[in-house]
Image 1 (tube, protein in one colour):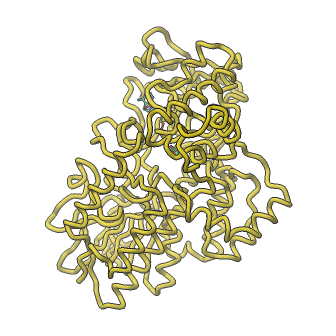
Image 2 (cartoon, helix red, strand yellow; image 1 turned 180 degrees about the horizontal axis):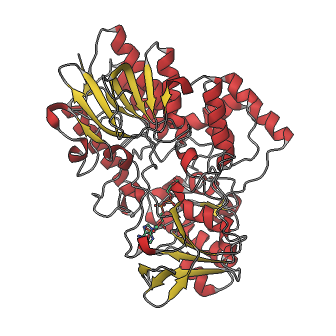
Image 3 (cartoon, helix red, strand yellow; image 1 turned 90 degrees about the vertical axis):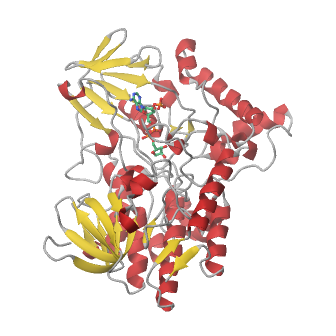
Length: 542
Ligand code: NA7
């Protein structure tokens, strides 16, 4: 980018995470000049930022690997079945070095705005520094969970101890992980019990002097089943990558797990219980994604699995009153993202851990000394906000994006995102939103969905170039139909009826709408292939 005359590229990609790195690789292969603009000082996206203790995959490590290079697959050794954040960040740096990606990435540069210049048929991107660059194609690779959300609690600025959002955990200057902020032996407060909160709570509880967990609503969690990868397992993984990726291709969430197609109501209670028991210990999302398919659509089926997990929680937490507080009452198992845990529930049996139910005694304010709820003050040295993200749309709409006729994307999306296939929005020509709203962004093993999106967009750009076309955007009709289809598919599930970041209902003021394609990845893959086979049906190309 340049602060004087804007540098011109064929494509600008915003974000150097899992998706952006692969899009760079593919577009460079196509012969395009590409600039990746990245706010962080290094590659990795979500794995660059989330350095909190305990941060790791919930996807099987081998299923998260890039599949495009056999050599990369064979030379990389994952050390745990669910890779910890420092190892994943090291992996993404290894990929960047191996394919010499860094030379096309501008770090420490946050994009402030992007506007479409119709006369020149190109996008102009402006960084917060004022630097500018122009490109025919603008591709967002921002990740679905990269706009962290701090709560708005009175007094936050007056806290005298250390406080930060998990996304902004300070980096270890000498390593890939987070800095030791000295929580061992200290009084730590954590707000939030989503997938992040669960990972960080179970880790910090090991050494904190006292850990106080401020829980607004509990989530249904199930065991991760992590462990080291032995030499024998490593060899087996390396020999079976084609089968692993094939399995991911055919499963709903692009994972190695897939649902049992029978109804939970069609089997005997004994058989049902035996399946739940088999799946409960993991590994990974065995229980969430491997149980009966109708737990996602049929309330009665869902009640059965919820009852099973509730019994597990009761059996693991000694104090029955605390156990009840940890059992969700407002939603069923799996209708929100299931946090995976390792001895999470047992944490609440420890004398150095207190659970504060802030649905009963709400946080009144942050004081210089700690957190004051409606009934008492908790003195703390460290406050950790595990309060989540303005998911899926937030990272995109935080950029001031202006399309044809001066229309702002955030205004167009004020009542919910509007796209065709999750990839383009009418009135914003040549803007592609990878792993974006209404696409396969979050009910998915992200690298698998990223590859699907990246390869499809790369083919689309190749098609346009081969046909001397320079501009694409969806027709209004195609977009309207996709918006309706995304809503219809989601409405058939219990997920759409539940408040969560999937529906945007975790963000004050955000319009409640199901933000992602809930029809599964095999169906999404088929739709994309069909659109391409019909000459990119639904797109206006010129
Ligand atoms: P989540 O799943 O959105 O969880 C955020 C948590 O923070 C959740 O327990 C919230 O309670 C709580 N929260 C949010 N705002 C507040 C305020 N103001 N006061 C108290 N508690 C609050 O985010 P995660 O980072 O855990 O996970 C996001 C995804 O990242 C995850 O699903 C994986 O895919 C990776 P609530 O439930 O809203 O009552």
